[in-house]
Image: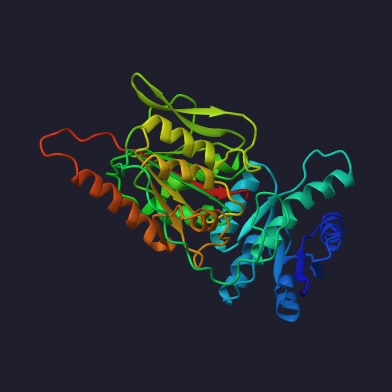
Length: 379
């Protein structure tokens, strides 16, 4: 198999060398060129035809966001991974870059004591993403173990072992490609959504706060970064904060959010599986779950628990996923009741909730419904 051809774009000599050295140490990756700003990068994209670009954000002449817009304006779909700082400004700029068409991001090493530590940080974050975005074997536990470029026939859902239950909560999980997927799904949900929503997107601190604010501006629903102990009410979306698992806890007054810094699951915190499991326990299996684009298999084990308890599982299809790791794992395990393109996910959510309400007996008050949404990042 030919090596993955990467173009490294960064105005820092030090960062260019670190990234180039790290990538060149992997026999499946070849750095075919470098550029010091977005303007020069455009010419090199045409000349070198890389398989993937790593792109700094802050650069002279043309910054990374402008460069992404320019590359996408020419209908070039080469995967682009942004290099971001773990700051409010860096998070905001990264989300702008994702909106402009970048596929993913990694955070620059901060306050590390040596070049060796910086290189290891870049190696752990960047190489798996490069391989996943180019459809190559990732070679890390829990991540997609084979190329995903060729279409895979979805496995039919396994027979149910428990009676189907009308959803009382919506849970959503996503990772790589999740921010843009969620920016299409959540704003398409009506303000009258009859259930609460919980959402896990693999993202670091600071980024989740910015992302919740952006989704809130786009949506009829109220979107908040989750805090511990909030009542779960219809019409509010609770986004897991970076570095914290988000789960659901039942109380005498109804279900509430719970945050913890328990061990990572599937190499992630927040992770999708703890949310899914806890929703089943708190709502006696009356859960509607959605698994969107993302690396790895986070959400597969939780989806099995949901389905075994009578809940419903929707997965994004391969064609519209940036990386069909998480939804692919759910689908290929026979756990997906529906496998849908991204633009049909919101309609499916509202359809399942409407049918649940219609099945309620005439004359009885509507039961609280909850929708849990989990998305996979890291991103």
